[in-house]
Structures are given as structure tokens and as C-alpha cells.
Length: 405
Image 1 (cartoon, rainbow, N blue to C red):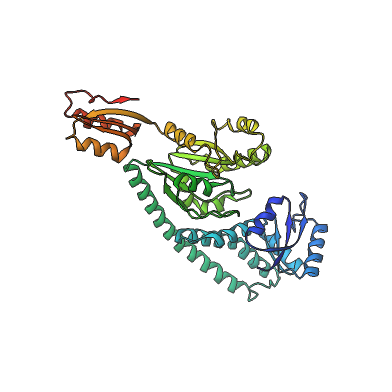
Image 2: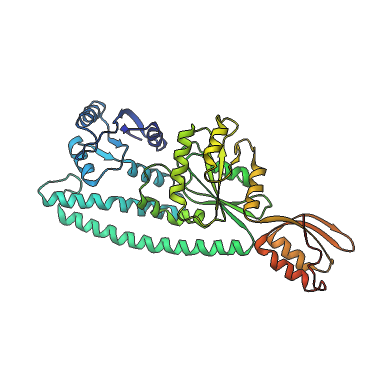
């Protein structure tokens, strides 16, 4: 990967750039002051230009969301390619996309990002400028613009088909009695590690931002719980970019429980900022209960203060996904929030229908066979009436000795 110059405000942005494999030739702090024409101040513009020439940089990446006019003015002034934070995130997504649906969503986001840039090029052609990129003029750019619109329409149709398939799959999973759990969190908060810890599956874990883009769903051991990990969030993701990945995020929006995963190693102000950012994105659309989970407690500090901050959402669960600490407490909390309780029932050995019903929707903890079957099991509240009705069909009007334990 070729060398780049980074104009940054926060150190986190440098990690984003590195996560794509770029060699950072130099980084320049651009501060908070803004020039409407170039985004960066005149002084920073000259510094970027000087360093780009001196280091033979191929690209400059600016931390910020550039207007199309600012992007155009920067490329014209600097004489090299300029990317902003949104373009960087799209490129990272493209690098991580493996599944068909993820690649479609990335391509849609990329095309949507290009549209205002194309409009700016058309505008500059009309006012007498001659942009280097696609310098053939207004008509060539306009044709390319129309091609993009047609391609986006085709992608939308494909994404809609995937969305319908996902909805049908969620419906079947619920009918089978599964609790659907989604993991939401800031990028690199440990979502994949938690998925691996709960499911025991060989999930690939990478120490880089946005290592997960496609949804990954696994069953939690023998529990009637399916847990889904999906894309993480980062600051300055514009609403249209989030919307482009909505088919993926719907696994979170439609979950019974959403685990809001927080990095316990973050200082309190940063933890609070990341928590609020994720909540701002998911809260308006989440249907289920949001349960905050503070991760990495084995190496975290100031946990009491962080717990107090997080209690504005709900009582947090403390875990270390890497070390396996707190996972039983987390499963207990998931069951509590979804109304799963323990029961005991005595039935005739001939009542295979009752046994199958319990196995289908619940989890059998103990089964003693004798003249009667004594079953201890966990069962969701939303299926309890169906179980009682089934037991009561031949139990002389009672519930067959079904008791909560």
C-alpha cells in the first residue's frame, strides 16, 4: 500500500488509516479551525502541500467530512488525490466485505458518496474549470452520473431481496423458540471476541477496526439463544452511510435483546461518548431491550465510576470476553429480560407430545424417568400458555403439576 499524509484531529483517526494498511509518511494536526473553501486553514493547506511534495505522497487523507466543493478545491490546490473520513470508512468496509450482501451495501455506499462529487465536477465544467478527473467535459460526466443512478437502482432491488430473506429467517427462528440477541458497539470494542466466547465457534478475531462487516450468527451452546455480531460504529458516520448498511443493522434493530458492548479500558469520558454515539444510532429503531455490557474488566480501571455512568441506560453486566469472566451472569440476564424461567412438570411417559414441545421451545435441565417423567426445564414466557394448554388436555382440567422453581 502506498504512502499517505494524514491531516488529523484525533489520534483514533490515525488508527483508522493504519487499519487499511496505508503507510503514513507523516501526520499533521489540522486543529479545529475551518476555512469554508478548503476545510483546513490556509496555513495547514500550505503545510500539507509542502510535505506532499517533499515526501512524494500519493494521497492526503483528511479527518473530517468534506463538502464536494472543498474536496474539489483541495485536489486542485494540492495536485494529488484527497480523501475524507467518509471515503476512508467506505474503503475500509470494501476491504472487509466478504459476503454478497456486504459487498452490495459497500458498493451502494461508494456510489452514493460519488454523486455529489460528480455534481461538483459538472458545475466546475460549466463555469469554465477543467477538472483533471474525467476531463472530457460535462457530457461524459453526466453519462457517468446516469450510469451510477441505474446501478444504484439495481443494487437497491438486490438488497431488498436480501432484506426479505432476512425477515423470513428471523420469523422462522422465533417460531422455533429462539431468543435473538444482537451485539452493538463501537468498533474494536470486542464484539467478535464476545461472540466467540458465548458460542464456542472459531470466530476470526482481528485487532483492527471494522474487522466485522457481515453479520455472523451463532447458537450459544445448547441454549435456545442465537447471538449476532455485526458492523461496529465510529464517529462522524453520516446518516446516509448508516442507512446504506441498514439491511445488516436490522439484525440489531429486530433482536429481542441488544447487548450494548462497551470497552471497559476506555477512560470514563470516552466510554460515555462512545456509548451515547451508539445509542443515538440504534435507540430510535431497536425493538428489544438494550442491556449495557462493560467488557475487558480484567484490565479495566475506575469500574465503579463507569458503572454509574452506564446506569442511565440500565444496570450493566460486567464481563471479560477474552478471559471468560461474567458470561454466566450475562446469560442469566438475557433470560431474565426475555422472561425465561425454570419449571418442573410431571407427565406420563406416553406424553411424548409434551416432551417434544418442551424440547422445541425450551431447554431441559433434568429428566427423571419412572412411573412418571419428572422434567426440570427452562422455558420462555411467551410459549407458556401453549404448554399449559397441551398439558391440560388430558390432565383433568389442571396444569399437570407444572410449577415454577
